[in-house]
Image 1 (tube, rainbow, N blue to C red):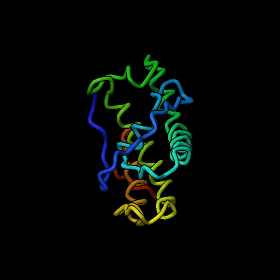
Image 2: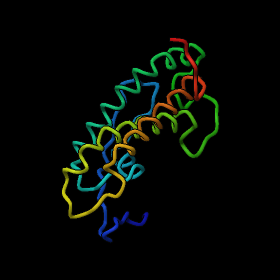
Image 3: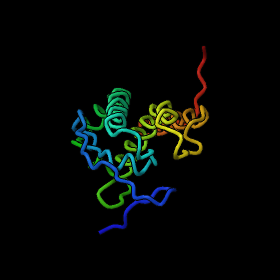
Image 4: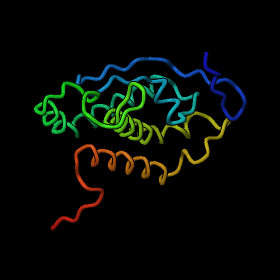
Length: 157
């Protein structure tokens, strides 16, 4: 049994182990606990608020990647996990990139919620506009990589 996750206060953090079914079968299903843990979401943020942020991010990312799904399925890949690439356990680089984009966008969406959950426990760096902008940039960068677009592009106006 893994050791419990402890917050800065030394109290155990009880994340919500709730599966999130992806609306597009090509992409992996997600889990609220994985999101909360990997993005250090304050445990006192209501789980339904965090869950809605993940659902909204899934909808946005799936829309952004619709062309990728069409292309990869035409290449014969039924799911992101089937696409060749580096693997770690049950994940490959494409599923890891997808999760990174969804979780970064979901956390960026939640940034406005952090100041409203109380001041008993501080959440350093979680309330600045720069952190939100950084998360959105991270998601955009990962999306560009999944889409096969260079990190930086120059376009004529």
